[in-house]
View 1 (cartoon, rainbow, N blue to C red):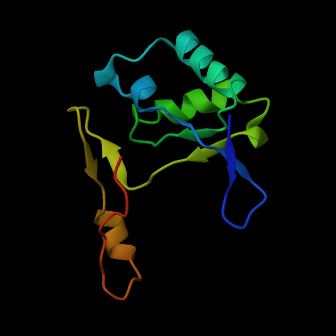
View 2 (view 1 turned 180 degrees about the vertical axis):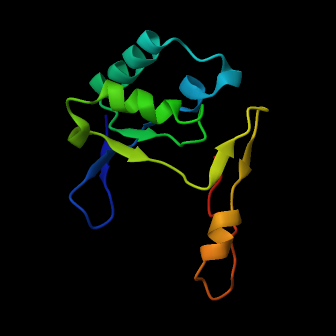
Length: 117
């Protein structure tokens, strides 16, 4: 596996990441917990240390799986996540910005997300 430095930090990130969308979102018919944990461990064993999850992936199931898979060595994995979306259960996610709009301190008042799941 090849790695890259993360910005100005000492963190080294695998060039290949593992997205948890298909392990967690119900419309993908995700594997059972034991199989999902085995896939995460295999990815780690192959050198992947960058995992991408979000609360909207299966209503947090992806993040729960990561917690279970790496409870003994969490300092060895890097997690990317997103905020501001909810799983509607209708094969799509929708923005949740009512709270952020009320508390936004940006000068433009923009609440447009910078990335989408």
